[in-house]
Amino acid sequence: MAEMPFVNTDIEDEFIVNATSEINIKKKRKRTTGREIEGNEEKKKKVYQPNYFISLPITNLEITGSIQAVQDAIIKKDQRLSKAMVHSGSLHVTMLVMHLSNEEEISIAVGALSDSKDFVEDLLKGKNVDLSFKGIDHFRNEVGFVKLSENDHTAILTEIAETMKKIFQEKGILAGEGRAFKPHLTFMKLSKSTQLRKQAVTSCLFMRFYGNIH
Ligand code: C5P
Image 1 (spheres, rainbow, N blue to C red):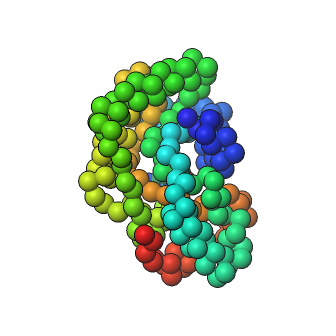
Image 2: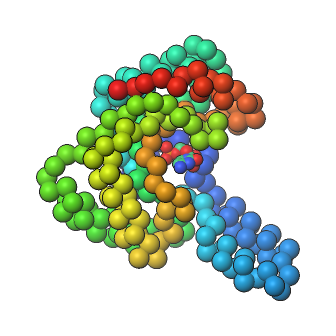
Image 3: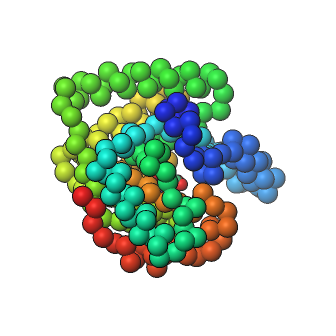
């Protein structure tokens, strides 16, 4: 869970605000007419801000070293982006995001995580999952990440992520983002700096750095 291994990870900018999601729902209610209520109830179920996540820490020195090289090359081109870089100790591949709003839900999620462990062990049968990374991409010109190379191991990783999502959802946890699992390794994100977020500085850089990382 996010608060354990990544207690110092920069998640606050994107994973904050239980209150905000509630405020948004209230605003929508005020604007509704009778006919819209049903639709908004549906949205209320779906709209939430993830505030916890489960991820695999990436600590392999070859990978973290390559990421560092990319980060250095980007900073060399534009010093301002140094603020956007993810620290080596926080590199991870997110498996599942969720919204937990109280102690009870946290405890249910801990149970779901424990159930997931049995499933993962059954699936792996003692084998390792080898992840390799190749190529750079971005989400909305705001998040720079390294892609996972597609192979049998990523298929297993996807199966693990999808099954964990199911296990959490079956216990009533708001888990998953309503989008397909896209394993990636984020190395920079503008959300780490409000100033950078306002400036459109990344898009051309990402295009220049569409290189390979092994
Ligand atoms: O999961 P990770 O910590 O690498 O996510 C970094 C950022 O990328 C987050 O702000 C997340 O919302 C965003 N993201 C995205 N689209 C995805 C996965 C993550 O915009 N499919």
